[in-house]
Image 1: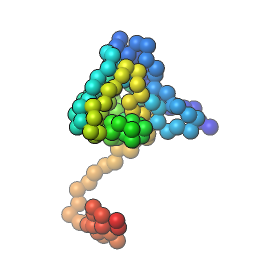
Image 2: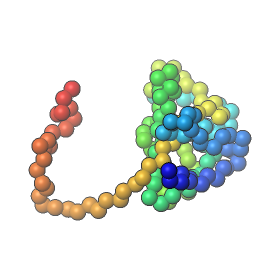
Image 3: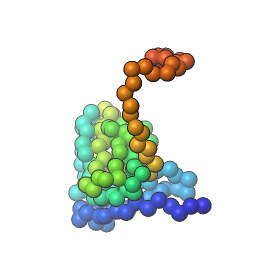
Image 4: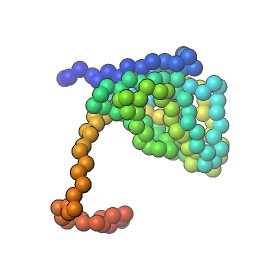
Amino acid sequence: MSAPIVVAVRRLAHGDGLPLPRFATAGAAGADVAAAVESETVLAPMERRAVPTGLVLAVPPGYEVQVRPRSGLALRQGLTVANAPGTVDSDYRGELMVVLVNLGDRPCVVRRGERIAQLVVAPVVQAAFEERADLPPSARGAGGFGSTGA
């Protein structure tokens, strides 16, 4: 087995006392990340907000960190990541913020230390884009938005 990918983390002052991202189970693909709000934040129905984590990540070159919703929050409260999956690029050194949106019909409370999203580290391929007058045909052609079935 190869060595794990290491993502260096710097904790900001408002993240003191909160856990670093961590995997809840041995088979988990995403590491849970917590809210670094002062005490609690309320999101009204359909409101979205960038929620701080108190963490700055140094993602290794050739990788990204995807910010994804936690399924339990989405199911129980309608709280999800608005730009899912969000991307933390390897050259970004600002605070990791999670853009949450309340899709439910009641206000949602986000408490300090609550797990609000999960982080998935993934390899990145930077492709070369070349403009061409013609493209090779495909069986699907231009069919989209439901063209392959219900």
